[in-house]
Length: 120
Image (tube, rainbow, N blue to C red):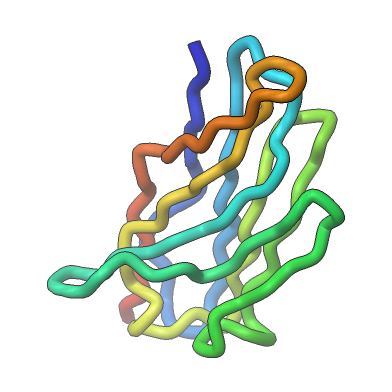
């Protein structure tokens, strides 16, 4: 059974930093691509950052220059380094990963979400 578990959320003051982790486990053959999404109360879920097979990355305009997505293939883990946090970054952050479950078969999974609150 494949699991995708996020961690690293919490309460931070404006201007602070957090690093989110998204770890895949189970009988898998690696993460093909992944993205971090967030959903604030009353708003739609939005894509924050994504990383592809070739490690190309893209970011929402609102986080460019502040957030960095990366991956550790040996640990089947994707990270989101968040710097210079603002109150408007407050949301539940979700990881979505395209995981190779058997050679030639890729399936998408969502994590359970982790709360990030930016407040003084």
